[in-house]
Amino acid sequence: MKQFNYIISGGGTGGHIYPALAIANQIKAEDPTASIIFVGALGKMEMEKVPQAGYKIHGIWIAGIQRAKLWKNFFFPLKLMISLIHSFFIWLRYRPDVLIGTGGFASGPMLYVGGAMGSKTYLQEQNSYPGITNKLLAKRAAGIAVAYPGMERYFPKGKIHYTGNPVRDSLLKISSLREQGLAHFNLDPTKKTLAVLGGSLGARAINDLIADHIELFDQLNLQLIWQCGKMYYEDYASFSSRSINVHSFIQKMDCLYAAADFIISRAGASTISELSIVAKPLILIPSPNVAENHQYKNAAVLAEKGAAILMPESSAKKTFEATLKTIVLSEKKQLAMAESLAQMALPKATETIVQHIKKLIPSHAK
Image 1 (spheres, rainbow, N blue to C red):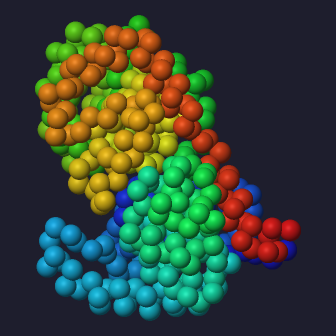
Image 2: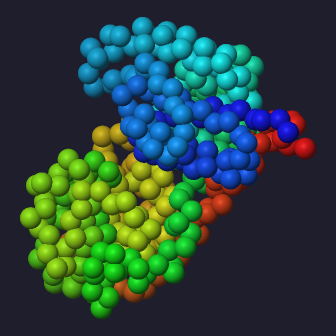
């Protein structure tokens, strides 16, 4: 039996890395003999996360264009040239049957070279507004998996596969983990739980917002699971109490989602895909510091469908109390939001994406 070779490239943030790992795991589950190699950017988090997941990764010297500090782009042409040459030798060594790009500047050189050499390339775009790398690579791509409808505005219509974003398998079973989740965080089962997520590094604006409203949570009889982020844990650890769980990072996200009754979160694409499956009443506070303002655009899609409340960071302090009360004090509102979110969920995204990828290999598709 022929061994099929895959190169998966993407990174810079967890939003690009975790979908890539989910796709790799699904390929391996369906074909244990498959050879999968990752390509990422030197010094970025994929160089740590991918080996931890059991896969080999090659790092290339590449970085995104800095829009705010133009002087930092001085070495970009040199980095790009070297990364293209390095990518060519990686391609030459592995001769992949398919190259898969999950976005971020790390995927650009590898998929550009692979496409130029005649290999099939497949893109996975997590956001409602695609990044510049995937837009540039779309012309040569054999297929593009997207998580939002209407993406023909940015990509060739005939190449688009509306699949949703890959998510962790454990999230499909959270309805049976309620008691386990409450016990894991030592929570009171008679009280409602608010989960606060600012990303793995944390978000200062969200943390300050929560710290300023401790009395409000007491008034609403809420207990908190608060992921404040590694960068800010020392600043907020003192808020820990019987009803407030402060964490720098949470490994068991399935337990968190199972225990939560309400969720406050950033609006990264992978996070939104998970939250759609979890289907709990949701306030989204998009980060204003991301490329193309894509978190705001992701959140706006949910807000338009009544699946979440969009709260811009700039106005959060003024609107937070009234908004939270609107959700917590209205079961009708909670049910409506949960139902709208559930309608947006695509739990079989990873399997669907891998089926499209396998169809690109003639001998695999038979």
